[in-house]
Image (cartoon, rainbow, N blue to C red; front, side, top):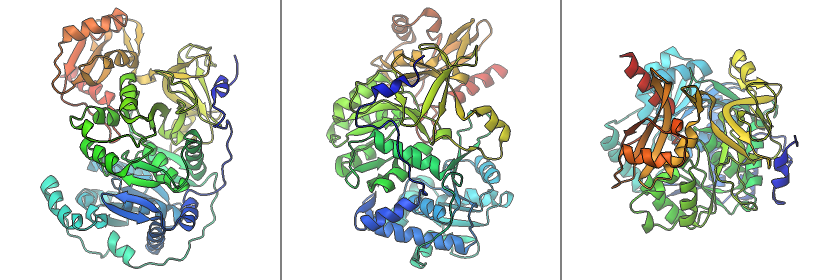
Length: 560
């Protein structure tokens, strides 16, 4: 079988091999701030921060962290939404040689306690409204200091005065904290502090930059160890893929949360490396995002299918001009064809599906944005310097073209392993290959197709059924806005196929109509036997639909 057939599909503008500079993630901020000191680095709800201002704030925070005991190799947790404080905290932590632990602000006390214990984080930087949650678990962890900030700290006048009242109305929480003891106020820290450069010795290939916890859909979340080399390699490949993007000229929309590895790589790191302007939104809200695109004119918009779906289906979408958007790579979940085509139609830009996982920093594959026709249903081809193959379940060896097996990848972006989990590491990393747990196949041109998660495959009456195939068919139905298909317990077939459906506003459709529709396109044994109509589906913060949550709900019903 031909080795790496995808390379012949590469447009001339994308090199198949790249040069990676042996340097740290934070070193790019020094270069960009020197080269473009007055250029806007961050736009946040009306406030703008230049690259020089950002660098100075990062230095002040880094010196302060060192002053309260942060040393090379220590873990610093960041529990913030997308905001300037996140960017400052992230790069300041790296300047001290610390390892960033990205922490979802939506975590419950139990989830927070587990992650802090497992990572051994020494410092946590968080929003003020999260302080009560942190204070309840801090004694069970190794956290020595809490640095607290508020959204209003980086809002322009008069928004900064109004925001506390909005926050109180929305959350019912009012926080008053003093800058004393082991509690530190972000604003106070930046009022003082040294601006002298920080110089430490780094091992680019082996020093960790990040502990990124996996979603924990199976068992407890695992800390993925990502090095400076891993993160720079992935961001460098991303830049090569979007080759029409010009350094210091693009504006990138940061609505994907930074605490998710995809948002972090494609916005937080790539922007600093390329001197882009980051337009940050603390959370996804369709109307706010539409308004922001209309006003700030972003050219690059990494996202997830649920984000694009939310924009397409907003009743006031036509009021806003989205034509500034030139390039979008969709990740975290399969991109329905209808969504891809409609989004390109209304923006005039390109939206393609990519693929990756936390363990690979995250991107390994993507469709070409320019230079080749989009291959419907495919996750695209491996990125530069990335190898991939399909491993047969029967033989354990590389499968021939078109045969389904497990996707395995190898490249400079692949993690060092799982934090304090040698057995899990050995199970996932074999001879340098990362076994993804995703089932798929490769065609003769080297395009890869995901049929489903290994663990999401439904076995009904002896048949292997892949939910994604059914979802692709049902997504074409004009009444459906969102859906997910899962295998639920069945006394006769072992499992049976169930579809959870969210309808478009004003649409009506019956189970029978959906059944008749599905039977036109897929074999009878794949057609859902049960439909459940819902107002919304459970999702992660990045918008990935939580299929396992729905399966767990079904299993609990059976046990009752």
